[in-house]
Amino acid sequence: MITILAGGVGGARFADGVAKVSDPDAISIIVNTADDFDHYGLRICPDIDTVMYNLAGIADPVNGWGIAGDTRATLDGIAAYGEDPWFLLGDRDFSTHILRSAWLNKDIPLTSVIYFLRSRLGIASQILPMTDQPVATMIETADGTLAFQDYFVRRRQADDVTGVTFAGIENALPTEPATTALTHAALILLAPSNPIVSIGPILAIPTYRDALANRTSPTIAVSPIIGGKALKGPADRMLASLGHESSALGIARMYQGLIDGLVIDQQDADLAPAIEALGIRTLTTDAIMHDIPDRARFAAEVLAFGQSLKQAVPA
Amino acid sequence: MITILAGGVGGARFADGVAKVSDPDAISIIVNTADDFDHYGLRICPDIDTVMYNLAGIADPVNGWGIAGDTRATLDGIAAYGEDPWFLLGDRDFSTHILRSAWLNKDIPLTSVIYFLRSRLGIASQILPMTDQPVATMIETADGTLAFQDYFVRRRQADDVTGVTFAGIENALPTEPATTALTHAALILLAPSNPIVSIGPILAIPTYRDALANRTSPTIAVSPIIGGKALKGPADRMLASLGHESSALGIARMYQGLIDGLVIDQQDADLAPAIEALGIRTLTTDAIMHDIPDRARFAAEVLAFGQSLKQAVPA
Image (cartoon, rainbow over all chains, first blue to last red; front, side, top):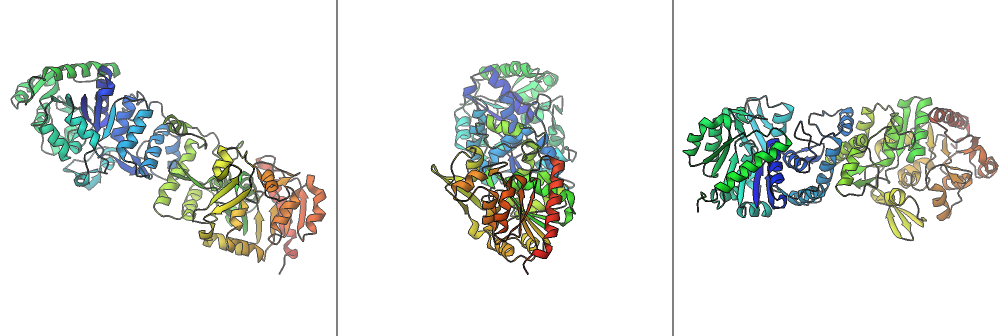
């Protein structure tokens, strides 16, 4: 069994690649839920939906999020009623939010709701919310503390991030299936997602962090930073403003103690020795997923790297 | 000021006609809410929305309900998740349900929510829910008791109706603006709506029924039965199965004591003497609204009839 920790578009695309080159039934994806928020009275789970839509093969290929070819009549109607349509939601996409919200309001846990939704989308892999309790990433800036989507979407990541907290994390319980997926995995993969706001919330739940710290199977991260830059999103600037190094080496330092290997891009080959010196093995390759078929190429390389680490794992 | 009691498509079209031939600012429409129901976790108010969309000039001209040219991607998505899409809801239409539900969940009264929605649609007339408390029409049939939309939409009015009750009506308070609209009206109009399930719930609130019984201004009903048949919907069969006469005379008997005049179609001219014998004046005319411009023709005739009754009203 392969277990992936993911959040955001890069994580979803990576998980899709892994599902394309291995048995999708044997994949569990633990997804960040700290981006989730309530909007127009509906519960929106951007990272989970991005994973679902990518694995269902219906994601918008350009944006990475949302549904390919989706229309926008509902949001236009909401705007016509005078509400600010700052968070883009397509018509078909609304069906996800409406049903999820209806079921959550009946006290069905998010894990069960997502199980149902992903099954109906024909997805064989498990998509596991990191927790069933609400957690909310809060972004500290010179303008004050912002809700995550306010920072990320409404203000287009223009603010310098001076701090990040996860409201509610102290009450966020690990779920049974996510814990099992981590403790029973033959291979654990940290997707090329933002280490602070995508992987960070998952690792802020002690059970999961402990599972990685005490892992008995190879654990590999994929650097979301290539040549010092994030391919997508504000990870590079966020790392720098929070005192980390925006590089594959910076990523290695953040995950030190939790991973056995790091996949880095060929542009960062010169960083490999310093990463290896931290006790982290490296795979240097073309770490950019250039298109949908290329996700499979990249995932196959990562899985082969995992296989090669089987002997190297701490007992 | 003109106050209209309405429910359903016929009522909405009639209200639209009245608004076209008089000052729309001086019109209040008290609308049945006993058809309202929760669906996919959203609050749906079919009669209110039909009035709103007709007065906003955006109603589907064929169906009478829903929004002209609306698409169906959200409902298709809901169906793809395995839910039965038995109640048709368009994408733009969903914006109404989503915002209404969000506000109701914040404990904003339905009257205030509808004030906001109709204002944003550019509607000058007041659209007043009959109550802010939930009421649910229940239909008794040989197959047991059905929720109204189950009878009306899902089962296409195929059941013989053996009884009608309004669950929650004992806790339904009259609203301040609807009560004022009735007690201060210069003319009260009962739209050509189903007398049992559209006008019936409104009159089941004692304050409103008493306001009609003690009226000081002319009150006119428009018969929804022409030549013994309902133009739309199951009113004719429902009247018959509940022991009423499915005719303009049957309508007159049901409203006796509450109205001063009844508008009947020329096909029913022979019933006028019997109706007049009940102490109800009649206007016999072409009572079918043939198209959108014809709503204005018909409304103008009804208003002129109201004017002619000014002297005839009981003190």
